[in-house]
Length: 494
Image (cartoon, rainbow, N blue to C red):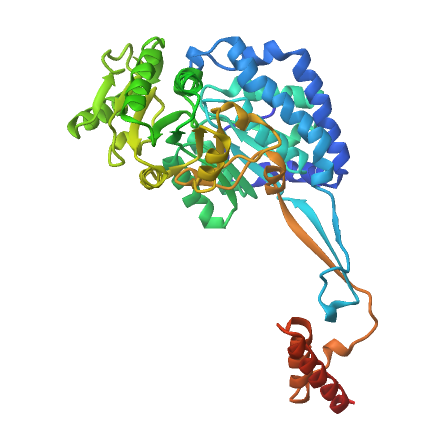
């Protein structure tokens, strides 16, 4: 298996770049067929692939094999199908016709093609080690790139498993290299000269990676932290919203960047809000404790203390237990009610099952409170679709789900990305595939005239000014005046 530990210099990249050039020259349809081969191999070995996902990490400790199949393996197979069917069309060369072409470029034909960046570095996260990095890798390969995959510590096995399936499907081994999982190895790869980077991680990690990428002006997509909001509107199906919130805190041990952390009860009566809070507490009380890191447990305790200090109601305290080991703890659901936008819990990125609820008199108050949080990854809205759509159009986030949570974002046809401290750029969907390329424009001059190369003088002022009025004048009178000026100028130039 091809694997690189700590590396220095750029010599080790030569073989990768040579293989990438041959791969980029292959027709997009050939690269797309590879995704079909992979999809069938994933299907025949779905359970084995799911079992390759480590179970010793937070989140995964709370997962079943069935969870991994539905959360990672099946969505990855769907991503293969999407690329198999759509990649060639998305990446096709676009020939621009005469419509909209500037008048003075009448002899010029234009085309736009998508060129792969070259070598793409995928810096993977631990919470969904197969799906997130896997889709990013497949999109990079479908676009014609070679990939360096730096897995998160402890997730190397699943990276190698997918690499082996790709090689069995016909991929040249040099096109996908699984790196050592250390932070230093990722830094070495950037220093060696990658052409594009994709990071899934925390905002803190994003800043560090961007600092190094800035030295070489290397472009990147940053899929970063979340502190995601849920809005419950009048007319919402409360039972569905309650079930979704409980699912969001339970799923993957709450080790999900899209997990709900803030809930806004918008325009509900006092009785409705109180009933919702009581029922939510009952639903969350039944959740089993989940493993969290010692760092997350300490952060959880700090957020609870801050909420108490600022007068919020603590309905559930999930940090009553203690550390079970030096590096892990068990946390139950924490529910903070009567929250305010100033609470640290309303602005924190934390991988622990915690929810903060705020009552908002109306949508404007909810939007103002939501904007106090620097993270803007996803949001969910529960309520009548018409009102939910109106609210969605005012949210500064990358993704909005209406009457659902988390699951719809696994649709391979849709792009995924955040704003603010949640990063920038997208992965997945047509937009994510195109992001793995850079546009290259071809202009072909088919006219034999050399008039455009002649120097201009005073006599040309009327010509060009008249042409501007003819083409862009706001009224018929203005365009006619421009035509007269144009005709006079042409006579003087003869």
